[in-house]
Length: 201
Image (cartoon, rainbow, N blue to C red):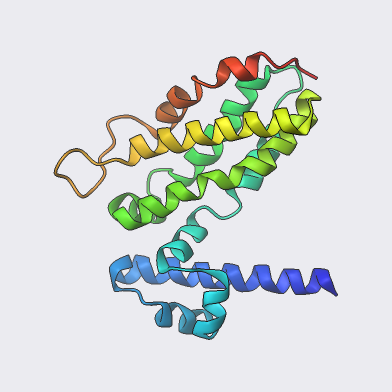
């Protein structure tokens, strides 16, 4: 019964975030109201507020849905003989770049709206717990050490993505001077020594 309830909650959250993203793409995020999102998702505004505290949060949830779990799964799928630092960096970069592929209307929306950029950066921390579990499993280390490493990776990714998403002075729209992949690799390079210090499986 609990699993059915949980599935319904996930389905409702997904429906709300999908409706929020669709409306933002159609009308611009500044023209989307919570009432519009709730109506499009077939829920009440009260139900909406049980899942999201702002329209930006709902829009970004659709863009970054399940990223944290994908990163952890990608790390588990890396070759066992690959160094932990290389495996973590590759897993993180691949999942973020998949969201930002050329032609992605959703990511273009994100880079053009300052309020959405801020919300997007706030989702980066969600990777910490799933990544910590995957690091602990892969490297055979205790939970505390794995959690500290995952937090460092998360912080480096957030700073790197934030710098990549920062518009040039006077601009409202982001026109990155480098690729997201390169920005992430540069940022994650600063935590690589800590990951390299961990013995492999």
